[in-house]
Image (cartoon, rainbow, N blue to C red; front, side, top):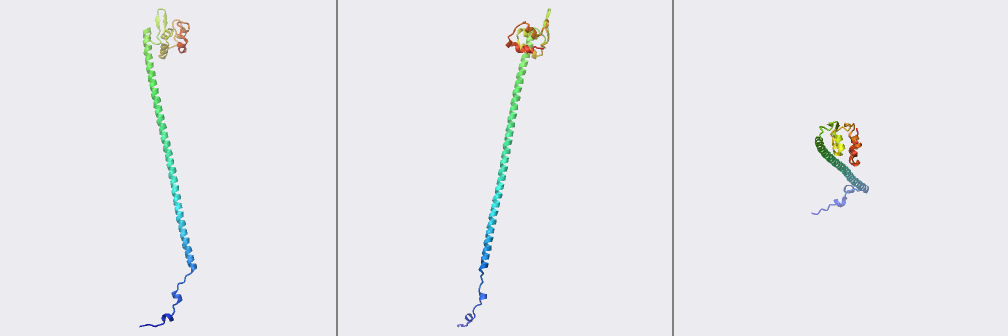
Amino acid sequence: MFDFSCTSACNPPNPTANTVKVSMEDIAKRDAEAADAKIKEEEKRINEELAAKEAARVVAEREAKEHEERRKAEEEESKRQQEELERKAKEEAEAAAAEAEKKRADQDSAQLKNEVMAWLKKQGFTGVNAPKKSFFSSTYALHKAAEAGNVKMVGGLLEQGANPALKNSSGKTAKEALELGVRWLSAAGFGIHLSMLTS
């Protein structure tokens, strides 16, 4: 029942087979390599993060620059369109004003022409350059208007084509007839038209 063999006491275990050899240098070397690998991996991760941040910063800067350029271009285009609208509005206003002025001038001219024609008829003239003869004398509408001091009619006759160089039966132009005193006018009232009567 009892085994009193001496295998374990008599046969001691083989120290080479039953022991683990541990080299502290190998452990230290492995630990150092693991630490180096971990440091390199951490450095790589940090560098990748930095590279990603830098790439994101560059992209953000580029996008911001593009956005600013687009904003400036849109602003310039808006300003150009506004200036174009203002220019067109100004041109249209000027054209409308010119058209209104032309219309007013045409109306004034038509009214003056009607007044001239009515005056010619009333005075017995058949046209602005047609002479009116009586017995031994002849005169022209321009002479008659100048002698009467009718400044408006002198201007209207000249506008309708009256010839200031025509001479009456006395050999005088309308201006000369005035200067000889057929009828004296105030300088302020007729001075402008005296220059119109020069041939």
